[in-house]
Length: 161
Image (cartoon, rainbow, N blue to C red; front, side):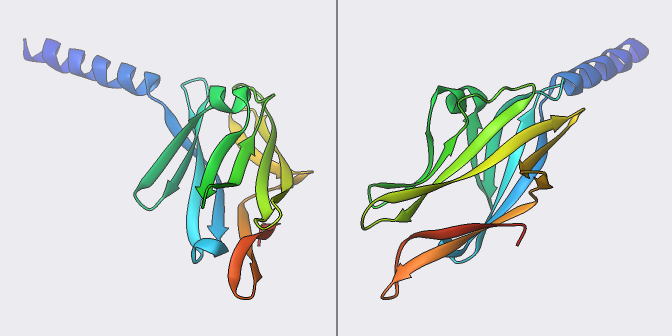
């Protein structure tokens, strides 16, 4: 009886782990407007290493963005003072192969101008990467745009700085 229980427990444990999702680190973002707060972006992958969602963690904060939400249109990642500050765009994203990922950011909140940083979310066998052209992106640094000491937007986003 004891052996059957142990074998059954092991089978359940291993089958649960095969079905469980896995988080894969994608990129670290350092946000100067938030006093250099660090945001880690992960991919939640299924057992086939296909994307289930993009996950943002900051300390104990966790935000999940289903791949289907990105395919449907713009996803507002950050709003402040009734303004969309950072918007993720990936309408052609595919959970198996990736796609073009746009980070649209508020450059100037006074005249509501935006810029977009275009990256590629790419799968290489069972590994994933974020690329700017052929450069693999490990970190992004969001630089503040100020006028008279007041933050009015994002000046630029630096890659691997």
